[in-house]
Image (cartoon, rainbow, N blue to C red; front, side, top):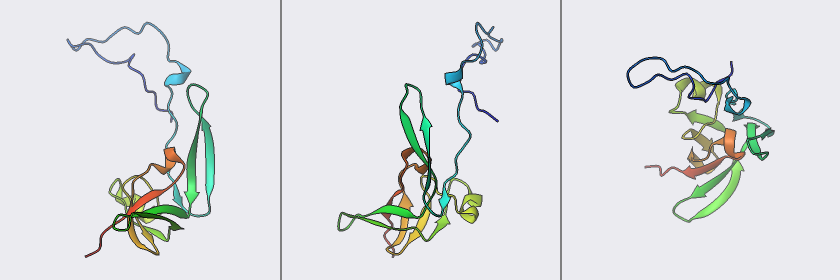
Length: 129
């Protein structure tokens, strides 16, 4: 179901309904959520307002991982999704969102980019104690 990002159906301060002066516009319509998973790279190129493009990941198995101690970036494999604070069901399904903990050959890393908006998976290694 389409999500509408519009303010024409809100209420007044007094609690009364506002009368709508126009119909909904096409540019106010949002997209269905895209949930990127671990797998072979598959992307979708979306047209955004203003005529630009945005690359969204449907699935990917590579990540750019930063080691904060050595300040180096390594492109490495994503083995699995260990935890996802956004939704615990996402961890079971292997969905990668911002804040997800992924397992890599270098160790555990936290995703700091939005793969469904940025088109890449950027992560920072977590210090293990």
